[in-house]
Image (cartoon, one colour):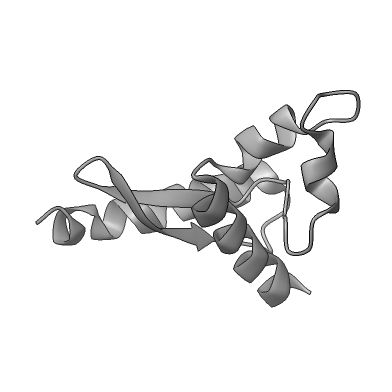
Length: 89
């Protein structure tokens, strides 16, 4: 399940151009966008981070398997930081 979750987190972050942690906050029950959570592949929990280069979203990374979304976010941010210089043409 962690591989599938990581893939869906990356897909969600790229599709919505927002971190999955931020999307989780925006789509809580009772919020106007709460229905987004029912869409296929949407992963509204931490670990998905958009990858930006020169101000545009060029992809996303999804991490799953750490003990909690905060740790997944930290790992994803570290992954993006490791390639940031290479993608900033």
